Image (cartoon, rainbow, N blue to C red):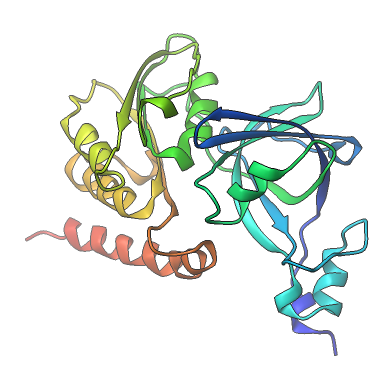
Length: 284
């Protein structure tokens, strides 16, 4: 009988070589990946394309080329790679280069410390890309709200707005040193919010609540820490009346949970929010 662990479809693994590493701000590191392994890779349909990076546990190495079916068949689960999901900041098809930006806060976490120490020539393996959002060129205006984890997707979206498209972008970062230059063909108002010692997302929620919404159909992208995402979703859905179809909204991460814990509870979290929205829509 086949092992149940290998019965599900195993995604294709793409392997690339790190070409360049650049520290953009004190807490943001850019890693550019290329090489022959990216032949046939595409990430040009959505502005929130993402890949799932594969990291081997400490002391574990795998035969190359990486074969996930063999790993899942032959090795115990604790020796399987750990995955971390990262937005594609840029895909340059002509150069065959994939750009990923990593938030780095010292030794905590997995991908951030990797980005801080990785050197050109090292290999990176990943699944993907996935993705679902791109700015609607027919929208009356666009709204973006997110923290550092959403900054790559927000920046990619702003760079791909139609010429003159009206947009507001609220981006919360630790302080002014974390701001980045973002060029856009749209008519964009970028508001950088400096978190300082305030709770994650507090200033974002306040800024969106206080915004005098322009007339017209809004297409909104709201991502980041799950707590403030939940508050903004409630505000946009129940107080502003934005249809769910006009929202790309999700918690990328959650305070107090590591990535595995958050992924395992995210479906329940989403279902609870949907139930709250349904209850709020019932006549009193």
